[in-house]
Image (spheres, rainbow, N blue to C red):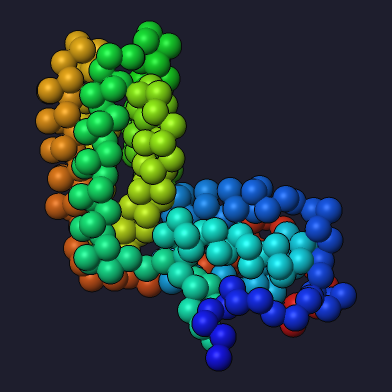
Length: 248
């Protein structure tokens, strides 16, 4: 009995092969990862190999490789006989993600306090302004994305590529947590809290910046309600490509 959908199978038929001169595997991975981080792909969304193969015009083998990598990153679930879907975090997984973020972001903030430059400050201030503008427009998906981007930019300031890579996946998983458990009318993140963290970093006050960061992450978690929400998602609309061939 095969253990998972990623188990080796017969080669693709000509109809399934697609054109692997299309987008490379890394580019497809980034597009799907990005769509999850921006909450365009809701938790539980089915990621059908055949549909993705037609959208990206590549082989099912390439799509399987991408889905396996996304599963390894913790943002996609692979189930035998059911295929792939966007991960739907359990309450325990959500709490575990916040515990990991606190540990990683404390290290990042302490490193960033010693390395912040005027150019870094300008980029972070621009991010906060953009998040504020998105909030005023009621663009929730942009707010979540820009909030995560603030933390990603801080990781860049810290200059530790391993911490930055870990944080990126934690932020994407948190986007799934927020999409699943956020209370209606309760924004998950505050640009004012980001501004306070940045002000402490500008003063080179690492202890204050860490305290504010941990309070900020605690506030994000406190705004969640662990009762999952569901919605349907159109993959072709998100990736902006008409399906090729018959609609099936």
